[in-house]
Length: 419
Ligand code: ATP
Ligand code: MG
Image (cartoon, rainbow, N blue to C red; front, side, top):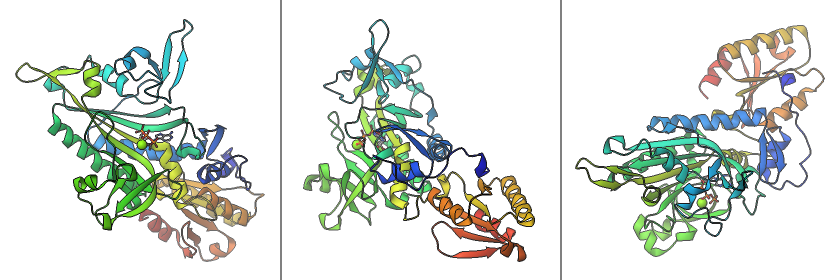
């Protein structure tokens, strides 16, 4: 894409009333637009990042047999009454609305009940199970505090998967398979090294732990105790000696860290399936309960967490896998040969399927273009000037390095292919 075709601009000033670094930088670089506290629109650059994250999540959910669907935002009250969750005293952060005739509706904050309800016509026999369904879409929560930018939205994007198994052993298998997929997802997103499977409270209907996926960050709301060698952690909320024994962790191996919850997985036993009357008939014709699990990933929160974790003085630093563009191509000056060379390179990169943003603005100084590329966090910067042209080369710099290299086009293509 050409920079002159992108309607967003960058800004040097910190947006008023925005205290979170992730939102400050994402707004300044033109990724998001603040509608109100905790509610942000995704502009073209921001949408590209969000879609890249979604795609990685989608591929890994498909790889373990997840079937994608899309549930509704508007939800009828009756399915929620079956589990008593429509009651504000039970779930206190619902947004609710009303039909013209006064009928109350929920605005989707999670989807256990509607998903179970949607499966009723299709699941009745042992032959219909096991089964996992997931969606990636908006969730709405009336969060009390919404000062953390896109880390805690009132409207945000989540991936939620729900698994349905015939017995506990089958459930455990699905659960661990999903846990392994989560590890892959965080690795691919570039945060695997600092993201820990963390034992946490399982909720009131199970004796089991749930597992949170916590990524280290000073701005995190959670405190966890990490065993770096075992790559496991325990949430401070359940940090008792008894639980350490259950998890095989030793107090002296643990380090206290601040972290952001970027996903979590829950054993649900048969709380929701029983309540909504979803059962199956086994081989012997006996009616059996269905064991469920639910598996969330905070898609938009991950985008914010990555900004928080990797940003430097100059701005955002995206891992290559989710960057809106892999390369920012900059021509210095308007010399005819420089421009011609740049256009050819731009076309060649596009033909190779490399996502490139060509900063083709003619009235902007090179220094300003460099600062913009840094603020936007584009992983690779490629500069064409009269000087590089004399060597039939380009100047290359990685966003995370101070070093500049003079490379031929072939060398550049090789470099980009292996990063
Ligand atoms: P938290 O403990 O942070 O309030 P939660 O335990 O209520 O989150 P879930 O309902 O299980 O979270 O949602 C699954 C995932 O969605 C969470 O792990 C988190 O990454 C993300 N998430 C939850 N609430 C928000 C929010 N308000 N804004 C952005 N992401 C969120
Ligand atoms: Mg939580």
